[in-house]
Length: 244
Image (cartoon, rainbow, N blue to C red):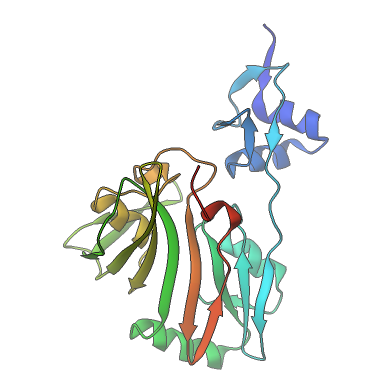
């Protein structure tokens, strides 16, 4: 059986550069059947046919002289969105596979005002997630989180040595031993929802880093934000409506 590195074979099939092909695999966009291709440099049968997920475009939700709010698609880094909208600066970040409300500011005066609101926990942040297992009642997690960086990758943990973090989970729909939940976060630490979901033994579906089972993506969506008297909503993705 003749084999070839996955990213090289993908580049040939899609007519793209090797570096583009490697990036697509690293983002989690490439499948063989229903299995995600995990290792770009892994050897694979050269007769393999790939299936590539197309990334949706970033859609502006709201814009004025101070701020532009984007419905960020999954599989895109927040920094990439910042580069797409010149003259803006990220006010906060969403993880690569998290979709939804992402805010970028246009001037320093507004940025400082907004940062103060975040620091005083005056910003309302509501997410939608699918978690493993059945959640029947609201759960509140008030546990400090510490974050470390390894090989340029952030990893967070519940720890008394960490910074304060509070997350509220509200069950919505149960399907196939998974629960769709509304999540409200306070503070806003790196990977806060993902870490607290694992802490209560209900990791987010698709979040393999924190104990979730493999899925097409991390099933986490930033649904609604209220900041300085303004409210921004990103409609939940179609894939979140019910769980197969």
